[in-house]
Amino acid sequence: MLGGIDMDSGITDVVGSKDLDYQKIEELGRDILDSDEFQRIVGQRHHIFSTVGYHSVHVAQKMLIFARIFGFDEEDAVRGSLWHDVGIFDRDSFEGSMDTAHSHPIRSLMEAEKSGTVDSTQADMIANHMWPVTRERPKTMEGLMITIADKWCAVTEFLHMHDDRIDDVLGTADRDDREMIDEVD
Ligand SMILES: [Fe+2]
Ligand SMILES: [Fe+2]
Image 1: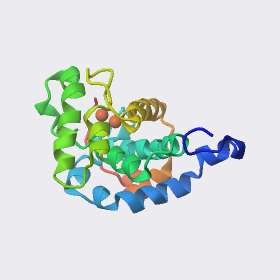
Image 2: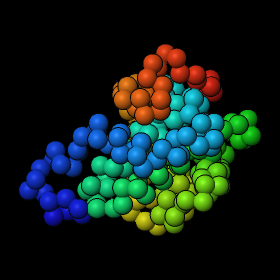
Image 3: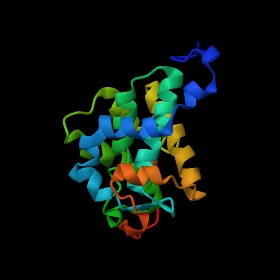
């Protein structure tokens, strides 16, 4: 037994179904997806070929895999992930890429807390997802795992491994119609 997973049941139980994961992300995070804070960053270009909106749903799906492996709460996994980069707006207000890396988690937490729904686990995920670039270590397993999910997703997005089902979650089924704000991190 590892975390919440009986290893006898095999890797397919851990990986799960992406379709079910995307459905779960919509169920657990609909209010975040529809929020002004999320809608402000949804088309913001990120990792060259992606957007902050796409990336955030992508991270949430990887965090659901980690939730199954380690047995942590799926609602925290999804909601912390959807909030983690909502501070990436008005890029001109950041002073270079290092300031962006250090400042956006703090700004994301401030924006997320406007919802009144952020618990201490989600706050750790949001504030410390850039570790070890930022100095403060995550205090929770969820906070540690999002540092890995975030980088895992950034690499596959950079490699242009696009999943159209994420566009469906975002409500932009035709990705050619998606508005991108053309600023590159
Ligand atoms: Fe980030
Ligand atoms: Fe991120």
